[in-house]
Length: 432
RNA sequence: GGGGAGAUUCCAGAGCGGUCAAAUGGGGCAGACUGUAAAUCUGUUGGCGAAGCCUUCGGAGGUUCGAAUCCUCCUCUCCCCA
Image (tube, rainbow, N blue to C red; front, side):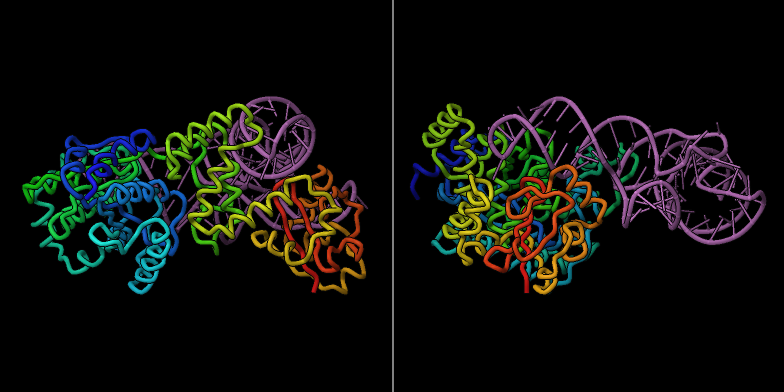
């Protein structure tokens, strides 16, 4: 094992600002030997989203440093609900769905981690496998026995919920025990000595190290990264439409690319350190250039490029850039008319599409009806009218008013109509 | 088991029985300005329409010329005491 890399895992995370907290001795452990470390993921969906990205990057750095990353699928814990997480009630997953999701998530992780590189290959485990047969009495005796309620109640996640007045269910209260037991199990069966995660997981992780100490008289470690935030206080990784997913079916590569491109200046520096593998020198240079000409958005572009390529592909990245240029660049109606059909289609791959019968277009459709009844671009006529009045609707990149009538002259390539709601929302209407 | 509070348009939160489609704030959306940014300013935020009409204030009934506002029952939520 290359000693050089091993020694630098913590250093690497440190300059990237990815360390929020760690237990004493963590660094020493990582220098001493190849160490297995794990992070848990929620299998309630068949795709990861960018909220998972920071922790994935921790595993990537870990593996780069010669250690062994393990992704734990929380098939069991996901059923209980983490009080430190959102407060929604969790659904029970049936096992088929669970396995399907697990496989899908693994496929996504393979873009980041090497699951076949010898000793420190990444590995995936599912806590459902060692939890499902665990009986209540057995659990209480083997796990519950080792920790006091006093200890468990002292956790912030629990305390907050008790103070909030809405209470906390026994299931959720027990969550930390179940998660702690995972750590124990991995420690015993897979020599895992470190659990990582977001800083909101600190309490849960430490329950695990505590349990290992008391039950197994072993030494295990915790390492957390800061929660990713947005400078404007909003939630990272959420848009009005919901999460930004890694799955291109859920979030198109174009949307994905746009998400990162729209990062604010303040956040871009943090993000590029956290989400890319660019070196410190490269980042310093980018930051320097960015400060000199912020309007070029050098940081955002570098960030978006790196992540889009890793998560999707070079080809997807290129077409996302192309699409962005056409949609946001100097694109005029003229450009649009000249665009060959195949480019047009690839550019609009990620935007919502609607179909309208050609003969209706030939007959001409008043704009308001076109935007509502014929397509679903607006849900009500009032809204469409309002937006038209506010000068917020464009057809083929040209502002239109409520008098506008859609006819054959509006067709691009004799087939398509490009509708814009505001500046950023595009819709492609296809005639059939 | 006992006592108390409450359920309002995306959220928070006002709302003398008529002048309430419902204050205000937040959020959303759009416009201006810009860098597809931030900040700021402006407009808008139930549906259909020209006026006007229609459906909304937890659910079901009732009192009234008229109810989000009053009464009854129901459902749910929260708090406090045992």
